[in-house]
View: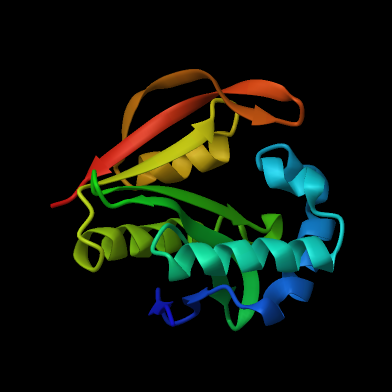
Length: 176
């Protein structure tokens, strides 16, 4: 079981099936905001879809392909951080994250992503961590930039979002 203390108020914990209801409530509350940046939101219309997603997250973790964790702030789920892909051959991982709007601006996601990066290098032996963010997603891009990632380029039409293709900024940071 993956549990990682970020600071005195924040903790990362591997997503569990019992999180499905609470995660779905957050998605419902934040639907218009999250849907602008996350392609899976448009297909998440109930707890059942969230349970299926968690099943896939758990399978990815069991097979060492990915890892998805909830961000707990004072014991409440406020977001998610993940290794969307663990590329063991190239020792590279891709990090994703999202946070409820009312918790933004407190450093919660920046500290959580920093903790995940430390885990990638020190525990998983990764060489490189990559963050891909929509060119228009200034909030997500700011996290990568605050954490010292290097902007490596722009992938034109790099992701499909809400039936259209968007450009993504690719950020990278290397192990120490």
